[in-house]
Length: 81
Image (cartoon, rainbow, N blue to C red; front, side, top):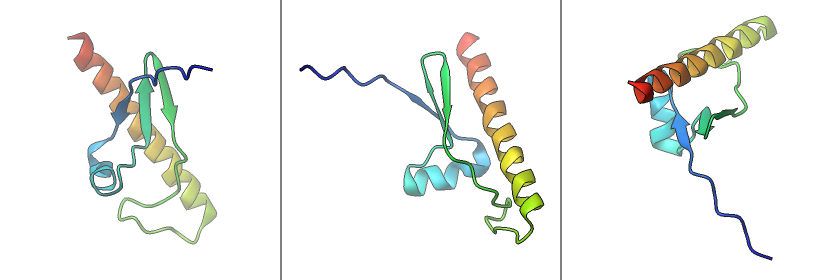
């Protein structure tokens, strides 16, 4: 059985997460065609510490998700220009 060709993807890496991408090749999201696939996002604080408080972790996770999706929007606007 033939294997399908892999689809090209574009990593979505906001500036604050660039070090993780450069060090570990970890992208918090990738764009495949018109789809955005988001990886597991953890509740780390901007200084990469993990708060003891669950509510703070949830807030951090959603803030990171917002940052990633904002970067995706910026990339799309750049590619349409």
